[in-house]
Image 1: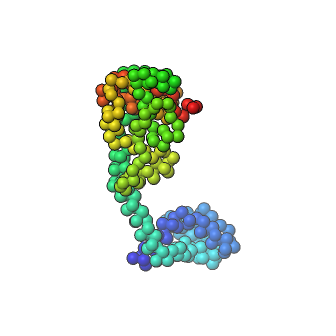
Image 2: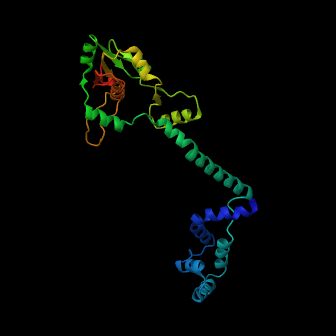
Length: 268
């Protein structure tokens, strides 16, 4: 295999470097670079006229012509047979890995990113139904009566800063590295600088256990988000608090309010 594939590999590599090889050979022979007439002759030397031209050029250049033609026809080996074999095995291995990633891992990876509803759909529903938004100050005040201030951020963010009286039931949690797909997903998020999170299993059940449906629920997250479209946006600004408003409404909570300022904008 190595003996037969070595020239093939060289041919592939030489396609991009052939012109430079001719130029370097001509310089070493101390003769002018082969003219366009000679290159055409070598590439298309099938007609009688081209043959006559080749003979004329050869006569004028003498031994230098033979040296250049020999370099073109019998180029020096760039790879040994063993190196050629290793290169081919590497390429085939990469092709195999790429095929497996594309048709084996990618579909599973994509499936893990899907949620029960897309933000586009949630935005459309909330926009048609309408959402009542309040400020953080209003939420704290009203929740002190017959209400609950629900903070849906992750636990570490809640621990670092929170509003008085808030209850933390995170809508998302860090990705649990329990299988290869989860590990791949976490690495992908980390590479792109995106928070490596996933929906908290049983989140709605935890809500129903902690908050009666007759309560007024004021939901806050880190960014607040918005349903309003601004230049460059089609579906407002996605946020965990707006998603939580939608999920609670679907579960039968009728008095759900959105805190329009995210916690990152609040100074305590």
